[in-house]
Image 1 (cartoon, rainbow, N blue to C red):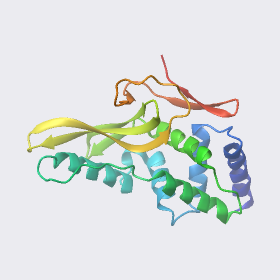
Image 2: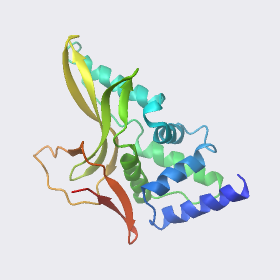
Image 3: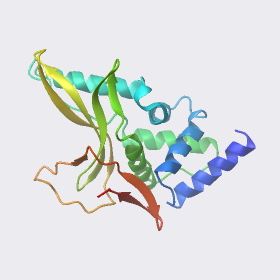
Image 4: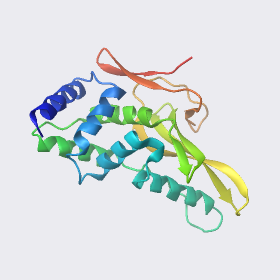
Amino acid sequence: MDTKEQSLLKYYYVKLMDNSFDEKDVYAFLQLIRNRSQEIRSINELTDFVVQREQYTGFIKEYIFDSRKKFESLGKTNTALRIEDVFSFKEMRNGINKALEEWQLQGLTNEQMNNIITCLISILQQIPIMNDDREIGKLFFAISSKQIILMAEIEVYQNMFKKTNAVFPVLTANNSYLDMKKQDRFDTPYLFTDKVIEIISHEGKLDIVIPD
């Protein structure tokens, strides 16, 4: 890493450590460390997805389509449907901290990592899910009383002909930002399909801005 890169890394690292960063800083920080973290899959794949968006064809897209197949196989097998995040909180935290350790920098706390994932969820909202040249779904920002969620909504076919939409989480973070009233006893998330959420920094903490 050359002197200029070191200066940029220090700038974003200080913002991460004192919680003065927002989603735009996370966007830049991931690109900065991506090329120096070739062996860390979560960093590479998430950064590529952030930058390439609908042109992205890597592991996360494979995960989304594999999840789609699970919904399409419902009723055909006795296997229980289980959808987990594409990368766990622990995997993402360990990946970023490993990259930071290589530059002799202190790792992030769970709270700081939760903030980064929340920003990632905001950055990745509204990305179309493409199958060849056709849009078959989209990623949305969702929030419940307990979680911030990157939610995929995608077309699925059952019995080859009956088309419906499946909705499932791709990434999740703890909701320590907004006091949300539960929609129902299941705490079904609010799904923002026609609003673009923004994550900003305000007085040392993240604020989630929901347009009127």
